[in-house]
Image (cartoon, rainbow, N blue to C red; front, side, top):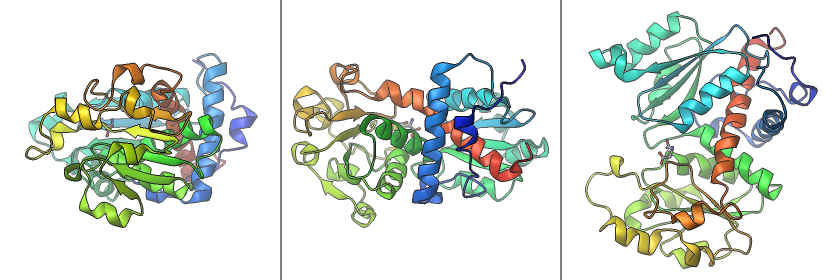
Length: 327
Ligand code: ASP
């Protein structure tokens, strides 16, 4: 398929990524974050309007998706984003690869690196895995989730969704609720949303809010009613049972009663408050379907849509950094 020319609205906003890799939301600074959001906005409009012809921003370049942990949304979103930029995409099924035969993370990455991809998108269960890889390869590395540490493109797509809904992130109160302890989404969002001027609160039981949270510059609440009072955005987190060592909650039923978002609890937030969730959702555990599926309050579908636009912005800006005008 021949690639389409890049529309002016995108070309005008295309600036180089501020760092060689995107490993953490803290790689950004306010101007760089705003520039990426502007670019992502242009991609979001483009994705809504046009045919399926890919752009030529990454024509002839290869993006490798290397997912050591399960993923539906994130891996398909990166794949679609890369294809829409005209790149070739290889999604490595890790179970079927040499990793299953015992090849290490580094060996796998170095092997893939020898095939000269442009960008390696990696998800791994160990915090720091993406950073380690970035030191061993010549391509750009994008962290698609490392343990409980970071998931920076999720924060970018969340900021994009919020900005498109409210016009600005600055000045909003965002309540991040539930299993903060195991959440890389929370850590990335705290960094990025605070950087963009939001007041970020953490709301959850003491067992699921890390003691380090006191140093993150967020207010901490251990009651939903107080934590949600006046919140413009209520961001629910998945209860990450797979990362829990020991019983941190009495039962999922009881968890829903105290911490699950339903209509009654949502009424404690600011009038017009919106609900977010990074997915996958545990319905009836951290969120009630009644709220999750109500498009007048839920931004969850938009988050998925904005995921493609935000990832297109990241891939295009990293390519711009590597090759400048010499596409
Ligand atoms: N999909 C997000 C992540 O990979 C959130 C979650 O799994 O709960 O971190």
